[in-house]
Length: 347
Image (cartoon, rainbow, N blue to C red):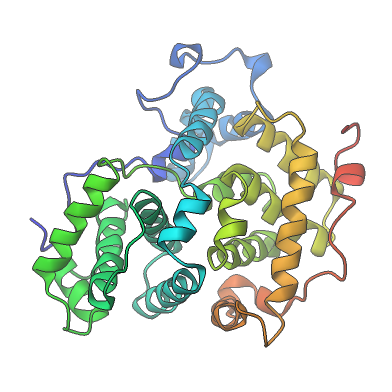
């Protein structure tokens, strides 16, 4: 029934961070020996006696965490859209305006950021999978609403206050037929080969922030701001694997807020758990941090293309629930010391 938020589409997004699913590959999905578990897995194991039931559930999965995280990274790479094809089908200006609309609309209706990233991912994957063609404005709007519908269907939250039809009516201002949106959704699903459980950049940020958040509560909020800023620039958002991108936003936030060096070391350690195939993780982080810094600086220039989008983000992240991190200015220089200071022994 498409008139409510339930769907038969299986979703593993939220569980992908630490899933106990059959999809887990490597080591036969068997628990790892205690002495080979990562610090992140050990931390999860310490939650088995936590007062929170949700935390205890996370703790019970600690023996599968490392293998599952690697699977999450591999799945993300497998379905990462080709940047050239994406920008050919979805020009940078049009894409930025779409992301700007999503940020503002989701903030008004109170949808979580998980749905924002899912909608953006569906749109990017869809446009990268299709040939370039002129898309009428009405069809473009239907595609946007279809991506939102998909995000709502695949989100694990069960507290949605609206039916899908009400959401389409509200966001489409009663100008778009619900039937047409559902028809467009089916076209998008076909292009995506009905694979809608790919992890988003936000999920990597949530995983990598597990050990960092206690250093300074502002670190995660500032990293979230920087990650959402990259949504407005496809080159930065898709120019790096999402594991590296999420780790870089946390590294940039940690350096900007001058938290303890241990925080930066833990970010690199957990990144290596996510993607052990990286030959020089510190070098990858430095490069991505340089791109993030350049984008952050550019977003403060009124004449820049991303300024308007960034201003809407600053309104959002200026709230106290995000520790008002929007007022924090970018560092004067890119964090070239990430490799040398934060990661002793790096090549």
